[in-house]
Image (cartoon, rainbow, N blue to C red; front, side, top):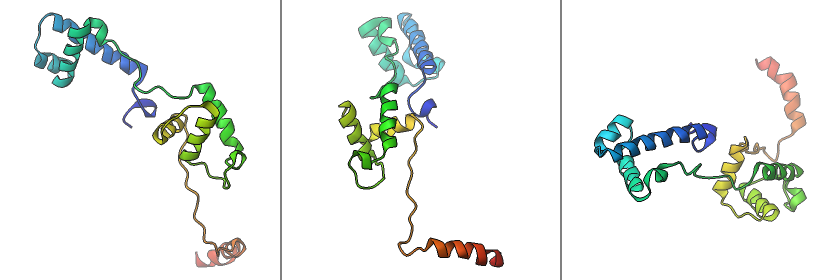
Length: 160
């Protein structure tokens, strides 16, 4: 797992990174070299250079955390509504079969909440709330469930 919660760093982790940037900002004020700061703080020189540029342009305030990089497009309340709609099933919303696809969920979000989002955003949203993908079992058209049940009951014990 790259990040906690399945995506993005936690608020605690963002605060820690902000403290590191502020420490770098104090060292910028003392005129320390980029390579020394990077080595001491155990970060890349490129990051320190980026922070120095931001510090020069905006001071210590420019080193503050800007929050999570991707906020969810739906609030928790809206997601509860979405789950209710998903529980009704695709047929209730006009699709012929009983499969929810990302494209269909995306269309449902656009219709219900007037929010346009990508398929990747729909997948991230579902995953963030504990959903996983499911693939329907492939069954032969000729499969006879009765014959399979009899075979499991009568023949399989003899084979074992």
